Length: 79
Image 1 (spheres, helix red, strand yellow):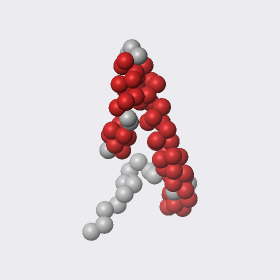
Image 2: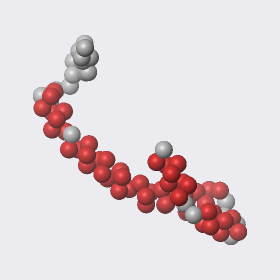
Image 3: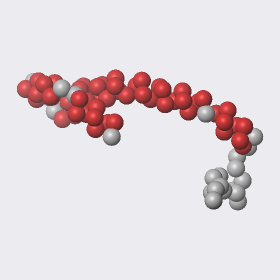
Image 4: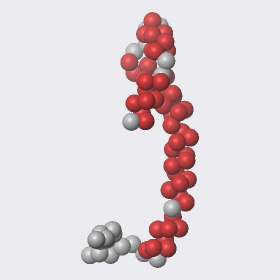
C-alpha cells in the first residue's frame, strides 16, 4: 500500500519530459522512479530496522539465546 501511494505521488511532468526527450521505459524507471522510491522509503526502512534491533532483548530474554527446539511450537495458543 505504501509503494502505491509513493508511485502516485511522483509528478507526471517528470515522465512526460522523459518521454519527450526520448527516454526508454528502462531509463524512466532507472532515473525517475527508483531514485524517488528510494528517497521516500529510506527513512521508513531505517526506522523499521532500528525498531527491530530494539526487539532483540525481548527475544533473547524469552528464549535464553537458544533456538526453539523443533518439537516445540514457537507460539502457544491461549484459550
